Length: 447
Image 1: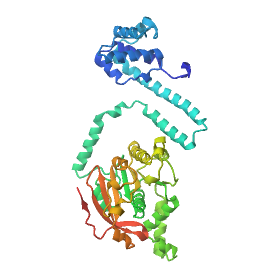
Image 2: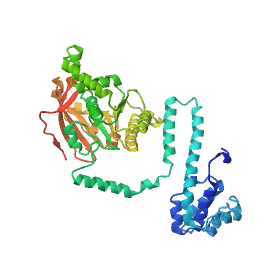
Image 3: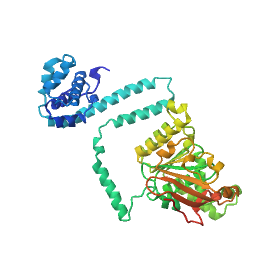
């Protein structure tokens, strides 16, 4: 790119350097803690700024004389224009405290420049026929996010506002009014989770096949969207959106699929189905049933949906069906699961939304008998490390073999950063794919 085509603020660059020349040691340290080399576009200014950094790094005051000596010692004085240029810079702004007046212009130019470079890269990428469309989409999404992060947001790093919010949470809890996140609607489980699923939480719901994890996720989605009137985004990599909504309508109406197949629906059941249909239709549920997609795709869709209207809960069914984006992930399944798990946690933190992700367990619990544990999560220990909560569904082997329509399923809260672990037994009404409070509801904490 030609210099005249690039956005930059030469006077602001000169002024900042002049402020550095005249500033006391503490002033200089404050300036260089904010200003970086890429704030400068003019090549000579970059050289002078780096000489300032080297001088301060050696514990020497970076005034005009010492900077000149530093440049001469590195044979760079003539490269920046000689003593005349240094003198001109030094006389430009003799008051070091004025640097904050010029900094916003410098920051804006830096950001606009980054967008120029990004636009140029996008043109090159768009014309690269060797790039697959999915790779191009993921690259563009990530690149735009990186450009956003280049905006100076150092005020957000201040601990004062964070401490105030933390104290507010503590005082609210002491008053008996704790700040609660999203409730699952499964009462015994909510009693264990205490503060609910809060923004930034990665919540894992794991089980072996056919134990009921998709049914549990659907019931949670139903509660959040229909009862709490919140917005839910679901990614179903296994079932179609139509099948999921059909299940939700039947479950909400508490009508058995067998009765519908047998065409033996009563007028009351028909009325219940109609009411459930209207509730689901008018709810804020979004569902993407695209299979075989990568973590980059999930992030992209979630961010766009959240920008349009804030999402309150994201559900992914399920983790092991996702694909990684990087070459490292494609070379090794453990690396791929690590990348996916880390991506889910990153998504939760970035959007400040709880993400409920379903996961498979390996076969070890079946081999050894007894309850499954965190080590039985299939694929990688990274899932356990990244998750804020891990719930494992477990059905007693004898209960499962009996083919009873209402087995007892334990919700084992195996990891919980904010509270106790424990077991919440619930009855699973298979006929209507719905969890209900067990008749033996003596759940309790393990901690």
